Length: 377
Image 1 (cartoon, one colour):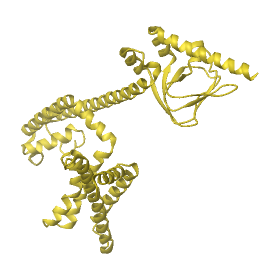
Image 2 (cartoon, rainbow, N blue to C red):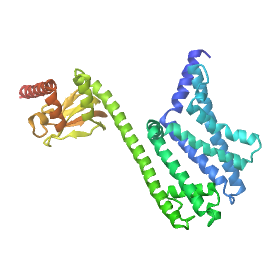
Image 3 (spheres, one colour):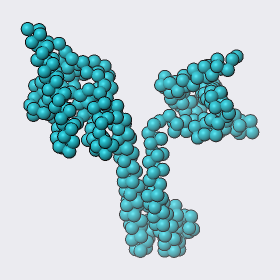
Image 4 (spheres, rainbow, N blue to C red):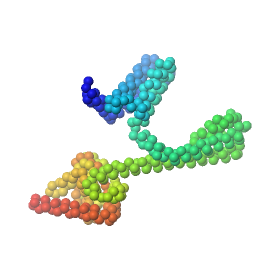
């Protein structure tokens, strides 16, 4: 087969396994496989049903084997080498396929070997966007997380040593060795297991109370760091997306970079479906809109006006500080950038040239509307 035909076929396979429909099918196969693995461990399952469960597990394994083969082949065609298996996604796909056959070949009992199907869950790490975001947040906040983890280890070990010294004679079954004391320290520091082993000495109980309080503080710090990291990452992504949309609007292209950065922080993005009323005539005007993509129709008399990407509307209500003069409806899925009235006046006060441009455009539209009305009469 000619090389270009091979590349076209591999490209088609790649688009198929990356499509949304295939993702849904993959999730269904994953859920079915895990249910079959769990059901196969129930002792009271009838032999014929157990056989069908095994067939289902083999089908799921065949599905993931086909997926791995297609990914390796398509990457080999496009990159001239098996680089996919060296990447994290390729290693995860290989871990979903290879361990079960290897375990069966070396003599591991089938009921135990099929428990390795739990590794199929690792495939979620490459397909769920939130997990990738979590990985980035952990990477960015690694120093802060490491410092909290160090505090956790310090409290853990010191508490275990203290309780080992204080309680080993009175409770050898619970604190007779340092590993046993470490287990108590872990369950107490996480505030999940206190009560399984209770110190008998007064000092031991004081230490236990301090360990529980430290546990609350440590996990509070972890929660705060991760929450702050998620919020910062979302702000960064929203800023990048808004920046990209702002630079597409010709109205903003003449602004210098610092002004665009300032404006990007003020603008809010709004994705609107087709045939949605964005503003309604007679309502108070509290913001103006810039069209990043899509199209809207301004309901003017005697003839509606359509505005496309790069245009703006809603400025009349802000300039005249009055109600909306027209109803605006989207004619296609549209992405809008919203500038609130307070931000509008603050920004135009610092950039009067922008205010002049908005006023000029507003006057032009008003004169065009009057001209059309006079022609119709």
